[in-house]
Each structure stands twice: as structure tokens, then as C-alpha cells.
Length: 373
Image (cartoon, rainbow, N blue to C red; front, side, top):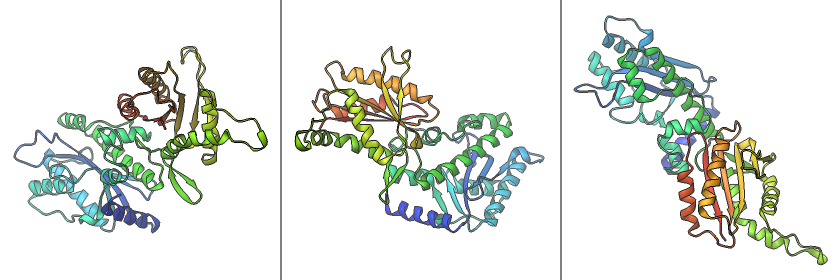
């Protein structure tokens, strides 16, 4: 994590510990690319309290009467800046509201253009926190595929009941359907608040993470832990072959042995590891066993390389796994481990990247690890 992001997270953590006010802010506007000779028009601004159980306030054209749309918009913006003035001590979370055509400065410019006045209050930069940037610096640029906000919300199973895209919001603005825009904007502000809470608690799900495991006083990323256990399994296998007083050795010879060994290692760190048996009609008549770790929304599929398990076959099976768990009510992250100590699969790192790219799907993250050494 960069120094700037680290400082911001510490500031927000202290604010939460002290019960200081934190609000998540989002807004909707007309089409950014159609605005000519004036700042883009605003239709709704919504703010959700992180502290107060997600209470929400909205400043919407649907709630304001006036002789013209611009008069109503002037009132909307004035009410919003009054709200900011009344909450000068608050920290403000947002999602990419730091651009000239979309953000707090754009709102101020629109207010000036409409009224000829300065806003009552403009929050200083040290009270503005871009959640997308904070998460990026923690988990990397590819923490979810684009569009990141929508995909991250889906991955964390945050409500999208009233969610409509920015383009659809602009189209509804042309039709003056401001009530639908208000519902969507308020839901997005609540989503920012929920994602922030997940980030701060260590439970945020990304393409490479499903939350943190507490072990021996430390916080360990759950997915990274599973991958590291898989990477060390060869050493465990070798250790099991050396037993005291000529006792029978424990051999790992097939896929079931691999599954049993990994499950035994998982229970050291996870309290609840469950077997999931595929139904015959879904798995093409074959009985296969996966594991789920419900506390973290993780499903684990374990394979052992063999002559018939080609790279193409791995990909085909992975897509079946993904589609199965994409609709599973308790799974948001699929981890596929392929034990290939014999080196049957060529270019394992490239194959991992290809498989993860091809298996990307809204609502579920997929991580592939080919253990070839």
C-alpha cells in the first residue's frame, strides 16, 4: 500500500474508532458527453451515513418544485452545499468524484453557472476519500474487471435492486424520470458505504481476495492462504512418507488423496470446511467433491494432473465449476487448484492467466493456481 493510501486508511480508522461522522456521497447527472458550453446538469445527489446504520439523505429534482428545471436544480445544489456546511467535520467517501467533469468541483462549477454565487461550503481535499483509489492501492489495479464499481458491488453481493447505469440515468433524466434516478443514486451511495465497511473489516471480496483469516494474532488473506497451502503440499506429501518405527507410509496417489490432504491442512486455519458433492446430472454422471468455506464465501475445486487432463480439459471443467458456483447463494470466490508436480501442463503461469481471464463472470471471482513445483 502506498504512503498516501496508508495515511488515509489510518485517518478513516481513527474516525470510526472515535465515532466521527463519515458519509458516502454519490450523484447522477445528464450525459457528460452531450453537455456543451456549460457544466453538466445534476439530477440527484445522495449521501449515506457510515456511522448511523446506513441512514440516507437525497437531494433530488423529484422532491423540488419550481418554474423551471434549472431553478429546481439550483435549489437541489444549494441544499446539498448547505448539508456539507452543516457537516464540516465529516469525512466524505466517494467513487472517482475527483474529475473536472464529474466530482465535487464539477458540482461547484454547476452551482456557480446556475446562480452566479459561490457554494456555501466546499470540503477541503483532506476530507475527501476516493474509495476506488484506496482499494486499488491495497489490492492492485486489477482488483476487479471494469466496470469496477458495478463488478465489486456484484462480487460482494451488495444490493443492486434499483441500480441503473450512468447512461440509463442520463436517458431517464431526458424523460424526467427523477424518482428512478433517486432510487439508483441512493442505492449506489449505500453501496459505497457497505464496500467501505467491508474494506475496513477485512471482509471485502475482490478478484484476488475473499477477506482475512485471523491466526496466531495475525490477519492473513484467505485466498492467499489457500494458495500457499497448495504450494506447500508437495513438502507435506514427502514428509508423510517418512514415518516412525517402520509404520506404513501415507501415499498421495490420486485426486481423492489430494483432496483429503488439502482439507486436512485447511482445517488448521478455517473452522468450517465443508464437502460439496456434485449432483450426477450436473457433473456429467461423475461424482466430484469440492470444498466450501462458507465463512468467506469460498469454493475450492481440487484437481490432480493426469495424462487425460489437458489444458483444454482444465478450462472446460473450470467453466462448469464457475457456472455452478455463480448461482450458489454462499459462494462469491472460486479457487481452482491443479496439482501438477509431474509438469504435464505446459506454460503453467500463462495458462493460469488465460483461465482466469476466460472464466471472468459478474458476481463471482475465479482464482486458478497450477502447482508445478
